[in-house]
Structure formats: structure tokens, C-alpha cells
Amino acid sequence: MNVSHAAVPLRRAGSYASAPCLVWVLVCALLVGCSVPKEREPLPSPSPGQIGWEVPPLSSAAGLLTPEWLKGPHHSVQDEVVNDGAQHHFVVSSEFGTFPAVGMPMLRTRVIETEAIAALKDARQSEVFVDALQFQLLHPLHGLKILLTDPGRLGTSVGGGLLEFLAMPGQFSKFEGSDREDSMTKSAIGFSYLKRKIAFQFGVDPYSSNPTLQDELNELTWIAFTADLAPQIGYVFMPGGAILWMTFSATRWTSYLDEQVRDHSANDLRAMDRDKLLKMGITEEEIHRFFLNGFYSPRHSTIITTALEELTGVDDRDAFLAVAEEANSEELVVFYQHVVEMMRGYHLHIDAVDRLLILPRVPALYTKNKTLVVMLPVDYLFWTSRVATVAQALTTSVPNRPRIAQRELWIAGAVSPRAKQELESLGWTVYEQVSAKLNPES
Image (cartoon, rainbow, N blue to C red; front, top):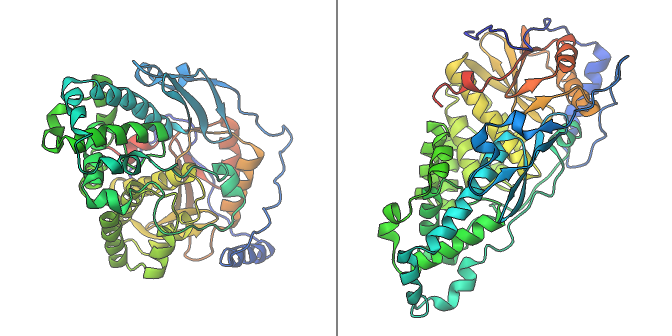
């Protein structure tokens, strides 16, 4: 494995040791319980140890973010940041409202969206669009404006937090498709395609859960739609420098997928994803169960499916869907999306993966070198009761077969010295700040 051993915290741990038979009896009962649609009891609470649990301190956003992300022309991140034991909780303030963001990836999304909202409002005041307003009253579809521009109260994250979800497994399902998709009427008349083009131009997701952004996208799209400005979108809309810098900071891989989201309808994307998943050997029933979860937008599903597709030669890729289909909030959807992106990066740039395995609530990699690898896209781990519960569940559920020579945790962010010590004592080798290793193309 070509992993650098630079002087960063959290590295090595002891080797894997077999669990006692009694523990395996309990684990088997736990795994059997995963297959039935009922709530299961949480794992016994682990001991806090002699010095008790860690209490995550309040952090300063200024110490966590670069100046560009901390404050821009139309946004500022509130300085006080709370950590729940794994993820930072930010609050983005702007003249358009206040937007909470759990974790660094969601923070980046909300900041870009806030700057895009300002740019969309500015675009509506431009000469081109002021002139275009006169066409609205004359357009034959004017009576449909309310239907076309009302985002329809998008689905919200009603589920629990990441650690609560991982520590207490359960079942969840919804009707197939995402609440954020446009109606058949919008798609049929070309409104949806134009909206996707505008969203792409401003570097935002057309299926975003941000209602303020959706309002602005729909209003501007309606004006462009009624004035037949679609051919001019590429040069009429020129976002400001802040948006261009932020969107260009994404990886080339996800930028390519955003072009797919722009060019294909939600139904077309789902059909393409289904075809890819079937070619991986995943059954129609398993695919259908994944698409039942409406918290996954078409963009989420496209990124996840493409990442799984690029795990070339890896067996049991259905294991990922079996775990990810139970996400019950946008926070968890983003978590699983980044898990599979990290898996893709590991397979392409670190070591060849043999198959995927299922641990409680977390899919894992099993490499051809007999290493079990768990990806955790979290900001900063502290040794709290809930983190200890998750660590205990992962450790006691490591299977006897196939043979595992080593166990590794790859953390997108950082880990406290206490958490490092405890994880190492459980037999895990821990790697921190791994994003650059997993995504050298970014």
C-alpha cells in the first residue's frame, strides 16, 4: 500500500484479534435483526473509562475556514461552531436568510448557494431580463406560472443526526423518486431543462433542498423561458468571481457528473443509473429499494452510482446500497455519498479492493491484501459516548471470514488524541486528513 507515513496524528494500531464466541453469538443476532423491518435495541453503552468522556469544545469558524469561505460579498459564517462528536455544525448568515450546515461539505454547498442567490437576483435586474419581463403576460403558458415556479415545499431532513443514526440501526423507506424533482409538466415543456442549465451556470444543484435558492432559480428560469432566452444562457449569465472560484474548487470528476445532471432529466438519470447498477450484478429489487429513498436527489444517486461503477472488479457492490438505502436525512445522504467517493479514491489511488462488506450502518472495503478499510467522512472525532458506541459496533461486527489481517479507519478530517488512543486500543490503524490522498485529481 503506497500510503505516506508523514507526521500526522492518528496512524497505527494493533493487529486484528478474534472475538470470543459469546460476542459472535450476539453479533449474529444483531445482523439477523438487520433483515427484519423493526426497531432494534441499541448496543450496550460502552464504559467512559477512568477519565470519562470527552466534551467537544466550541470552536471558532475563523480557525476552521479559509477567508474566502468564512466571509464573502453576500455571506458570513457565524463564528461559534458546535461539534456533535464527529461533525461541525455551522450557521451561514446572509441577507437572504440563515442556513445551517452540518459538516464541511454541506457548508461549502450552502456558501456557494448563498452567493448564487445574490447573483440570480442581480441577473433578474439586468437589462436583458428587464426587457424580457414584457413577454410574460403575452406568453401562452402564463397561467401556469404558479405551477412552474412554486418549488412545492421541498422535502426536509426530518431524521436524526449522523452519530445517532449509526449507533441505533433501524429501517426506513419512502416512495421511489425525490421530492426535489420537477413535475412532468415542467419536464414536458422544457422548463426543467432550462432550469438545469441555469443552475449549472451558477454552480449549484438544480435539486437543492434550499427553498430560497429554488425560488430564485424558478423565477429566473420562468423569465428566460417565456422570453425564449435559452440559446443565450451561456453568455447572458456570467456569475461573479466568488462563485467561479468556489465551483472550480470541486474535483474534475464531480464537475463531469454535474454536466450529466445538467443534460439529462431526473427520469433519464435514474434509468442510466439503473442500467449501470444492473451491469454490476445488483438485482432490480435491490435497486428499487435504493430509489425508494426520496432523500437521495438525482444528483446524489448519479454520483453514488458512478462511484460504484468505478470500483471495477470489486465484488458485492450491492452491500453499499443495502446500507445507504436506510438514510433518513439529507445529512446522512451526504455522508454516504462521500463514503462511496472515498471508496472510489482508495480503489483507484491507494490499493486494489476485492469486495465490499457490511458493518453496522457502514459499508467497508476488503482489499486484496486482506485489509478491512472503513471510510468516515467526518470533520473531527472526539471520544464521546456515541462515538464509542459506533466504534464498539464496528469492532465487534468484524467478520471471521474472509480472513482480515489488518483494520484501518480513514478519516476525512481529524481525530482527538484521546479518540486516537481508544481506537488504537480496539485494533484500528487510523489515518487522518486523507482527502488529498484519495482525490489527487482535485
